[in-house]
Image 1 (cartoon, helix red, strand yellow):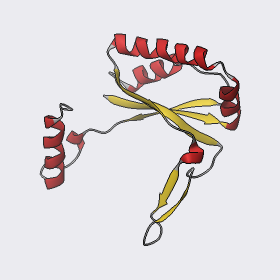
Image 2 (image 1 turned 120 degrees about the vertical axis):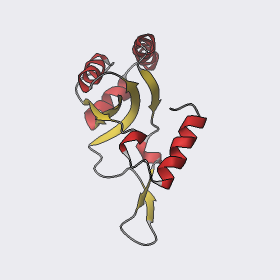
Image 3 (image 1 turned 45 degrees about the horizontal axis):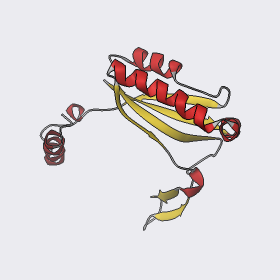
Image 4 (image 1 turned 45 degrees about the vertical axis):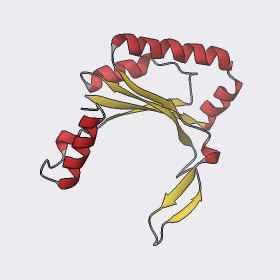
Length: 139
């Protein structure tokens, strides 16, 4: 099963990150990533750029309204994510608990990633997506 670990930081967490030793933080995250790779569970990992550079497309009007981001409350913002292939939600939680953190002000949301097999297989668009996934080695 695939799970997404979404890193979130509060203002307190963002302040701690701004004060942290960047080289040490990279090394710590790199060691964690290496553990994930050696365990064979890491499928993807990305950090996100500053929320001040984000853009929000709001579909509550026609045409959609485009504004500077970030989206919603700024008390907690996404900072990056991992996608893991693990046996259970409990295993995803265990990996999240082992991840590097600067302490208070950081949280990790864990969500299962749905699969194409959960959608109606007789749908034309699902069949096209399945073909694309097979062609690109994602299935």
